[in-house]
Image (cartoon, rainbow over all chains, first blue to last red):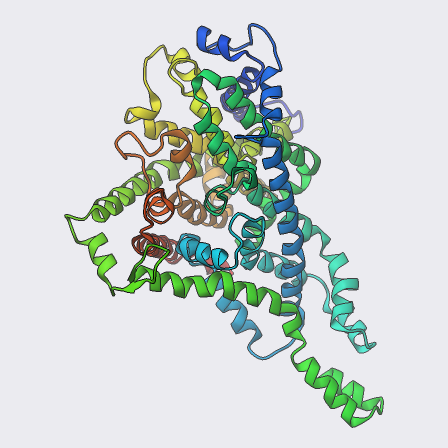
Length: 281
Length: 313
């Protein structure tokens, strides 16, 4: 122990991880490199790892497309939808969590348990009727179709509520006795203290919103209104293997935002998962 | 609440004011939980009831639905001559095949990775963690495009590497293999992070005690690590099972459900029935969705029950 000389288990860990990591990285790296190849070269040469002649023509082609695969527009749509969704989710979920955790009213716990149980019903059941409702509201083909329905979830309220549980009640009860309103306590005392869990649920919601695929592929008819993730399916249908480089470029461009988000908020991402598991487990 | 009103009355304010205030205060909680309750009602409760009604009706999403009772369920489950019967059972079969072949690797591989990353000699933990975590942040459509090229017969890596001539998306068992490999690449990050946290949470003292008792690496793993992370293994198993049952994006992007609809999961049939290019058959779609939902719910509950998940709480 003291000498810290690597033992068999350490060597095995290294070998295993390096091998597996290589297997994980190679496809992504090859895809990235292929975006710099000319489509003609890809088709003629078949498999190569490095580009024969480096070019950024695929990027130019993908980014300047504003008609049948407007990827910049799609990314913009996704950004608007996800930021609105996450913002509203934070407000609504934290308010509800405050209500269920701190306020006293008849049937409070029973109501919350009922919500939790109902939310265990798999989402596939709601897919078709939810579409009908969104359609009745006139939201089909508008960002609202992707922003609002997801706000009904109970999971985030549960996570925030669990976190609030650990905040000493004396703090807000003292303020209550001093005559502060619930809203004031919520906005001035509770919100600042629950920031860590809010970061966690934001990242969670943002990535799942960004990557959602089935729902946006249903609620948008107009190509220019669709989200990036659903748009890529169209991209796949549009280009065949003769434009493999262009298609891969679309995929790589779509990966950039979440990748950058990860690099910025890496620490929180890792916290997020273990936090969620610790609370739920 | 009582405490507040008594405080108010003690300060000697007018009685009427207090009563008016407490009426507002009695329902003040609605201000906080109300917005979510409304959303929950509109987007979860009503769809649930409405969806069940659709499932009991014949409906094309345009004209008025006709109530047909359990006819949809009878056709789907029992009517051997019906297309819907074939679609449902084929979709369910494919979904179950995926669950059976994809579930073990999506638990075991991230667990092995987590064990290796938690090894006390290992450096660059952050790097390895990122390598396995980042794929899960990408949308399945982007991942699908990348891997449909990776597995492409003429220009992909796989055939260049193994010197064969397989069209992965059109030949079995390669189509399933491709879907499972991509699912593992895409999906192990979350479970891995949970396991790393779980392993870090195991009491160090237990390892030392085991060492004093002369336990080797295997014994320590078997009698200290495994019991210590049991709760997280069970949790992730339940979650991954229901995630596998919701299989949709991978076959859509990689195989289009082929060859011969042999990788077409139930979700794909449901989507096509309700939102396909032809006339919508929303009633059948909703009935199938309810059946799938029921299966997922039943399996989750059985797993929770069987694994005695809440014992420690």
